[in-house]
Amino acid sequence: MAESKPTISFHDFTSCEGCQLQVLNCEDELLDILGAVDIVEFREAIDDKADSYDVAFIEGAFTRESDRKRLETIRSKAGIVVALGACACTGGLNVLKNFRGLEKSMKTVYGDSADWYETSQALPVEAAIKVDYKVHGCPIPRQEFLEVVTSLLAGRTPRIPDHPVCVECKLRENECLYHKSQYCMGPLARAGCDAWCPSYGGRCYACRGLISDPNNQAAFDVLEEFGLTIDDVLTEFRLFNGVYDVSQPPTEARVEKQ
Image 1: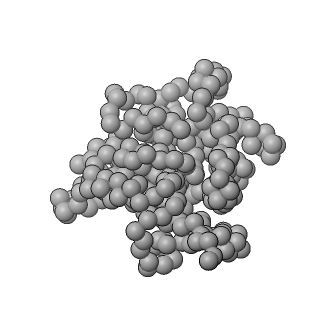
Image 2: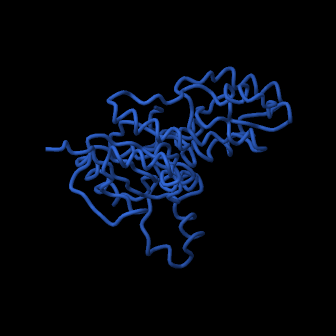
Image 3: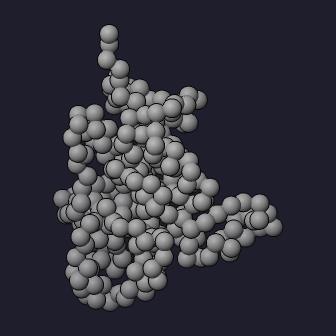
């Protein structure tokens, strides 16, 4: 009797679902993956549902208390849970509403119909359930998704970078954006994107989150050297990492960095 393949599922919460589209963009590599696994749930591609799965990929932030039960159900059905993308890993852009105020955010988006919809603080998935691994980024790099899948199939721990984006900028021989009088999150941001944004004229906003043990003093030294203050950079820091914002009083939104 043929041995059954490992089963994989994809689930979406508050997000644009761009990270799941990145999975579909794997194209030829995805065909190889399909030869080794069975995808049993994936709203972007199939209508099927499953009662259990070996690996569950979750995209999107936890932004409604009513979603907690669904997250807990996914956790109970899955052997391994992987947070997929910035929204699932750090709350992503959704966390900005926590600073703006929930009521004000709802009024801005829904106007007089705001009371029709449920909302709560935007949080990463791990605020509700245990997460085993993370695929960072907005959107995720395809190569990192493939690394996680192939590693889990091989029974080894995925190799996820935990060094600053500055390292990748230097490898690509990019001119430091600070030398162009621009602010950049590179000294604290988790690498693994091949310095996408700085390499193509943008700034690093740390969409992949922060490294586990950032050299905070070195970061402060950089700001001082180029005449910037914490207030100058706080807004950009919050763009993807507001859940870690040390300028705010401790709340349920505080989640340990992974």
